[in-house]
Image (cartoon, rainbow, N blue to C red; front, top):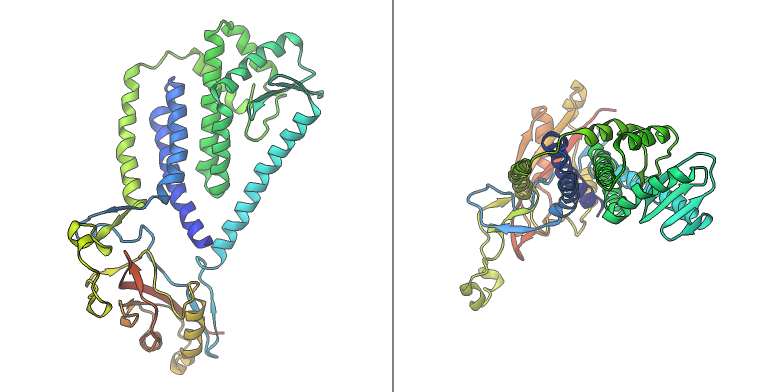
Length: 418
């Protein structure tokens, strides 16, 4: 399960990174803040959903893999002259555990930040959506649809700051940040997840500033107010802060910048081919391995099992992969190879070692067929790897569209001297 989650997170992060890069290159400098906000939101939702889609299409030849982007590589093994073997495949071992650990830490960080805001809400004095809390450091920010302001802010400044934060609440910016928080949990390893959250917070501030100035705020005095509180304002997680140092320069530029013309939205058209490419890579699967849903097929009775003839096509990945001795973790295969492979004595004497990749097919009967060396190290080691795979017992075949099919698999075997 964690392997599948890791693959999903990687594919999702690729989508998010490409779309964020498009925003930075094509849209970031425009003053169309609402359009940019919707693009960033759409990018986050797109990256979450696309890897989960399973769109079946009829593709000629082998243009599409039948199971997605990732080809199937079995966990690698280490074989020593004493014939001991152990699993060392990083994809099947350390990477899923590392991802799970990061996921827990990232989720804990978001939960801890939310808990601090809840504590502040309970301890503060509430007046509608405004919560005043005791603090010697002047601060004002909004989160979860509420405005938090410290008691040390003067009455005159507090009214203007609350008006700014009320724009965030009215636009529903807090909901955007919750989605961004989810993204940073799932993609904790992806720098673009944090960068797109920063870009979204910037757009939020541009939008709120524009509304304040349009609503009657004097531009010069408003900028002075931002400078007055920039060095003292904290930046709680998942919040919009009234004046944040890292965003101040760009906010000032946006306030004085000439409005972008409506024709700038035509740049959004360029994002369509990018989105289609990602759909093709991560969502579209070749229908050829499955049953054709035509009227003839529906009306025709299913053939008996002995009459079924699998297509000659060999798939890389299918909906239900072949398994060895009913073990989907392939630990049983690791143990079987470890018990049956022998380190060639002559190779050990010569000091020969290395990683041999053996490619083979599990046919629709579950038999191991066509073993071949995909990456060679030494003829002696190659032969030892081929010999053990050639006598491998029968598997449970893989299926696509409910039918058994031929599936190609690769196993790396490392011959290592002590």
